[in-house]
Image (cartoon, rainbow, N blue to C red; front, side, top):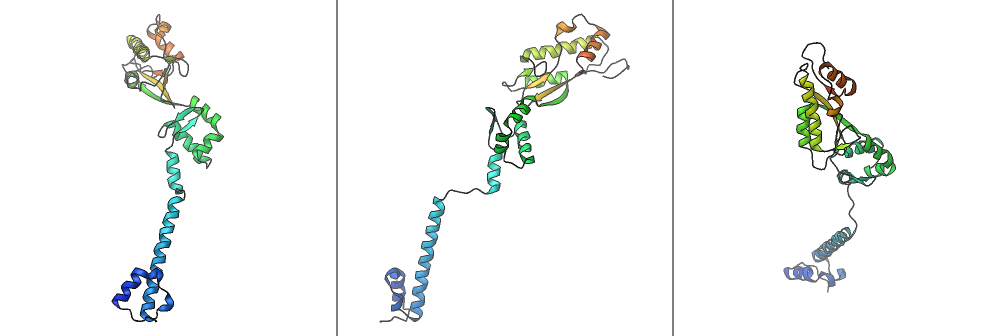
Amino acid sequence: MIRRKLTPSLKKKIKDDYKHLRLADFDGEALTYLRQVKGAAKGRAAKKKQAKEKKKAPKKEAPKEKARKESQAEIKVAGKIIKPGSKAYELISEGAKVKNQSIRKFVQENESAIEKMLKDFLIFYRKEIDDLIILIRSLHKSAKIYCPIKFKVISRPYAIFLLHAIKKAILETELTYEVIFIEYAFDLNGNIHFNCPRPSQYAELMGEELLEFVDDEYPNISYIRNDNDTTK
């Protein structure tokens, strides 16, 4: 018997048992409703299958997200870990951009050159000696102090002693103002480098002789003469 009229009871039967009902047994509005119910059920099944397959499939990161994660990942150069945010990492990242490569690929292809750069690169600054002493006292405990530059590691107390001693000696000449500057450098590992004479090198020098020694041997140390002769 063909069912045409969609009564409330038939509507409920179609909704509850649509899987077992044949389209050939219906016509009119009843057939239309059965098709709608079956179509909606197929749509739900397809959507569920798609969601399941999507869950199983490996998640593909968007290019921007992938690049962002790479830019935040540590890299290793010659066994040394370079952390994001450091000056070394910034320089490597800029090099990768110039070559239009990922950071990791750039490191793989240029590791020896990068290692040399990390070893040789210094960033120079200039401070009054007392300010440099304050900076040395605030250094991270893992930081090293080199004096002469890149040559010999010295202790923090000894570095402060050397700076105090040369400033005191220069001021005792009474030929300069009290502000004594010194050039120093940071390497890419956060270590500090500066050149400064040992007291034994100038123990017997006084007045102009001491200033001439500083000018000739340690041009990174500068002062202002108070006799208006010249500025150094």
